[in-house]
Length: 372
Image (tube, rainbow, N blue to C red; front, side):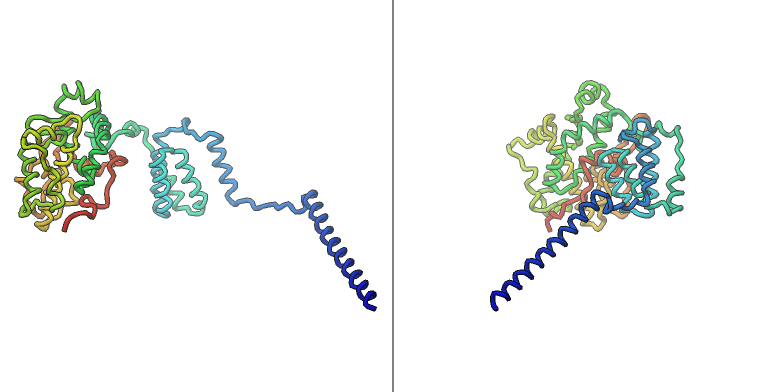
């Protein structure tokens, strides 16, 4: 009886597995035939902007260059387009403008805009704003010029190449003094542009050809034009804790001398042709001491580069804190136009020129490192 029961169980098991394999075989065969006969092909989904994408492809073809386009007009149209987008989606507008500023690839930047425009086709007001663009060919001649006329002189391009060589020195001084590099360069600009414009023979002989900064060795000293008397005052202010210009103990030894021949050492450190470190150091400390004086008097000017530059130029003796200081300083004649030292510093500071080398810091002073 047991053997008969066992045989029935085995027979049932065999039939069960045969049926299972048959079912699996059926589905595998069916799947194979479905693939071969394309029965299971997914027709996919056609994007509703497919025609728009095709138009963009046809517009650019296989090339990513825009040599056949009027780059003056296209760049102006690009900025107009970015501005229009910024009224609706400022985040996307900023991304696109940032990409263009980093790469200067107008083709790709425009295509970024067109990717956005695919989602703006129902916004008639936006499209009208984008299309409301007028370009006057007569204005294209000023494309590469600055609104600040004095930056259009050939000496300005030479200055930019020259100051770039001193970036590490300027940044080093900024780290030691807590004075923003761009602010240091702002006072350097006024002094150098004045010299470039007046000392034509010196400019022709070595400043222009060698792309170097002019080093003064007579009434004013170094590349930032620090007077000997001013240098002495800066040194004294560092040590005198009772002075309104005192910066704190951590700054006291920044200008310590290594020899007993202080006058000679001061002259050499400021007039060195090879190393302008001390020119920048004295300039930075001068600015910071003036800033500290006005801050203590209740008239902060830490965000007034034009006032700081004016006072740097005219001297400690006329630095009198008050509510409404005026911008001025030495007059500078450039190509027939007259400017003031303070205005030159201000225009450079906010011009965007050399921003890749000397950007804005969160604070123009201290970098959260000022002594209490």
